[in-house]
Length: 82
Image (cartoon, rainbow, N blue to C red; front, side, top):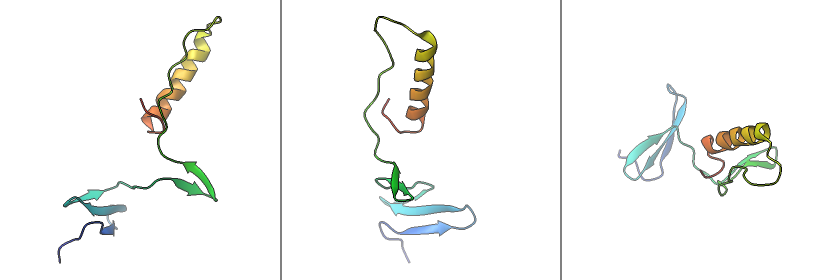
């Protein structure tokens, strides 16, 4: 039996979900619009990019460095655009 578009199965040996999309199998990818835990949305669609801190009359290098690390982590996890 040939798979149909949208068919989803659990691969027990790999402990992953696989979905048949656009004529091929896609494994280990979950698609959705949000993640809800305990009736609270904890992850939603990616938001717009947040620029690094710049300008201002007082420059705090340590704070800006830390803000850049937080923004980099958020970008790496796909929470905000780059």
